[in-house]
Image 1 (cartoon, rainbow, N blue to C red):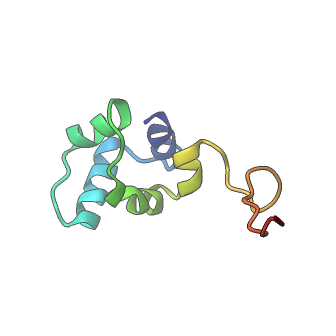
Image 2 (cartoon, rainbow, N blue to C red; image 1 turned 45 degrees about the horizontal axis):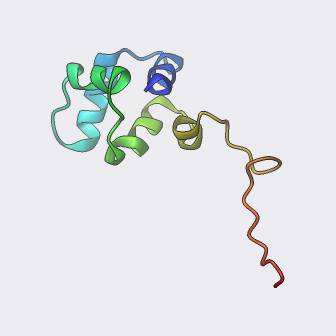
Length: 84
């Protein structure tokens, strides 16, 4: 929830602007009060995550995990088969 607010502020957008842009994306009305709730007490709905990231230009991985995405180093998943 806190990362949602941070992403919005970094993008230089108001809560009203994000609510309006998400409404356009979703094809349904999303009130400013509903969006405020997602920043303070609830999690952004999964069907709006990609749109939110596009609107705010934030990284989805960082939004969800709090860790900046990196292809190398720590956090990389080892896909090699383990020998028995």
